[in-house]
Length: 177
Image 1 (cartoon, helix red, strand yellow):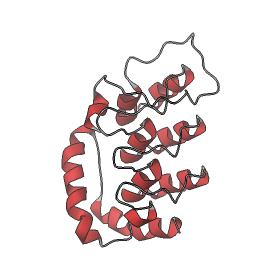
Image 2 (cartoon, rainbow, N blue to C red):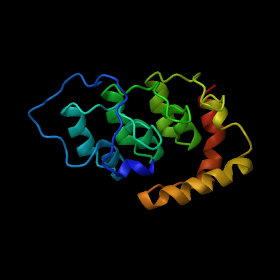
Image 3 (cartoon, rainbow, N blue to C red):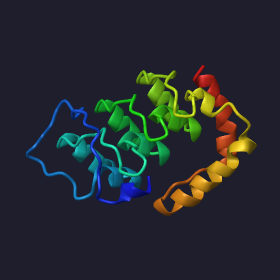
């Protein structure tokens, strides 16, 4: 995820998912992952409009722009990427999809957006967990991992309210039944 702020990008090999591509308009000066982290919806829309591969993975975690938007709780960008037909089945280095990520971070609104877009609830990550299974364990056992992520990602604007997360986990688990 940290490399998402760099200009290095890794292609997924997938075709550009955008139906309407306007090659006459210039791409933004920042890459799509950086635009997502910054919450720059206009730049993301411009990337979509000019045919940027919206499923390209970042070099560090293999996260797509959609996964990055989920991680950083950018719901309007999530909506734009879903509307542009971002691939909801792509998995990062941990085997997690955007739905795993949304569930794990207790992003109730984004979980619902992904469910509404028919995200697959049954895909297992590299730890053998479905999106639902990422939130059904004891919060106290996983809190140190959340704390580590906050420490690593907060310089890039990542925020996570631990109380809200703890309250969201059982709600997300019910949503994903």
